[in-house]
Image 1 (cartoon, rainbow, N blue to C red):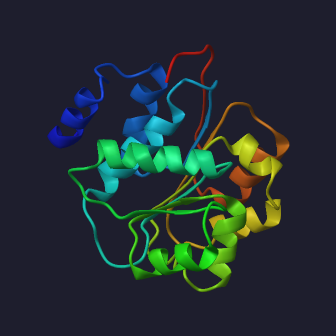
Image 2: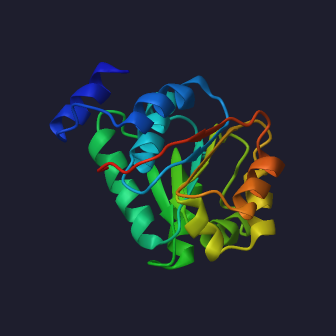
Length: 203
């Protein structure tokens, strides 16, 4: 792990990783597709943030290289804050696509240059339809709290959005396995690895 990232984690008081983080962070860094089932508080969100920071490292180009789907606006803003706290050294351009702002404002920011875009499935699909979300450079497509995302999503649109990037790593984190999560994994992941954790830890 990069020295600067380790220092950022220590400044935030993170000196030990959860079991999930220990297992999944190296797998994300390797670029493998991953489906992880674990209880809330086990470190899923932190794992996504660290995995993206390790792969992207610095700003590059105009099109996003990571797209992360979350259940709601609160989740998007919290994850953006985690990127800003842990990845201050990297200066990645992190933008959100959710219903707390006018879509025109979000569309313009994303289009003008993004490394990471975090948003709800509905708003990401809307921005994509406006030709402001170019998926051609995406290296990581992640869904956090997938069972919650799917509750308020059109499953077909979710699969279409996930399949937009031709060659990318797909990561799905959920608290429980459902038939819809299995369908997303089956239809979007090339080499699917499923990891399940028991128990609950603080995130």
